[in-house]
Amino acid sequence: MYRAIRRNKVNSFFIILLFIAIVGGLGWLAAYIYRSPGIVIAVVIGSIAFAVFQYFMAGREAISMSGAQRITEADNPRLYRIVENLAITTGTPMPEVYIVNDPAPNAFATGRDPEHAMVAATTGLLDILTDPELEGVMAHELGHVRNYDIRVSMIVYGLVVAVGMISDVLVRMAFFGRNNNNSNPIMLVFGLVAMLVAPLVATLVQLAVSRQREYLADATGAMTTRHPEALASALHKLSEYGRPLQRQQSSMAHLWIADPLKPGMVARLFATHPPIPDRIRRLLDMGGKF
Image 1 (cartoon, one colour):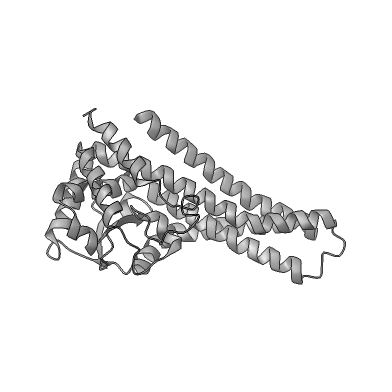
Image 2: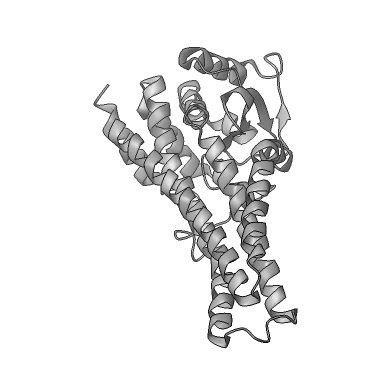
């Protein structure tokens, strides 16, 4: 169990390094094609600056995009007390608690660290789960907080957007710029292909980070409640009764406990979450160890 947690953290670290390599590679290609070494510095600094901005602002952006409303204990004692009890049990600062008025059962956590964390659940989730199941789901979300997954997610999200913006700008420069007449044609074609493929690779990297972190949060939540079967049961209900959210936002799909988007033909490749049956199997395997 602990080996799996450590392996996920190490893998995520190397994936983020790959992100940085993608950004630097785009800058190097642009610098070679346009014979301007300053482009590399501008690209890397710009990407880091955007990622830092997202680090501080993306949590509030996610809350705003989801339409979540902050609650107090008086507004929904059941949800608030479950989160409060879990925070006390784990020694985690009490996060802000939100409810999303949506019949699709789901939940997410966001923020830059445990001191600035926010957790949210939809009305659909509250309607279909028992108290132990809801506790398992919120323990999963607090697991994201305790493992600093919310920080990793915010940084990765910022880098994904940065890669997309950089690629778009460089492709436009290639087609409409006038300073590449002396460039090597082969290198120019290679650079264009790389600039077009980079956003796809960046998105796949983001999804890989998200899938690893979901397994880790499941395990952390199960260890917190000592009742992995409850979270497994909740995930089964999410699979059975799940539906797309009314306010779909692909940019924050990786934050939810279950994929909030409509499935497509390449859903498995571009899924933000590991298959629910796999997650349930791992949780049930843990059940006999407590």
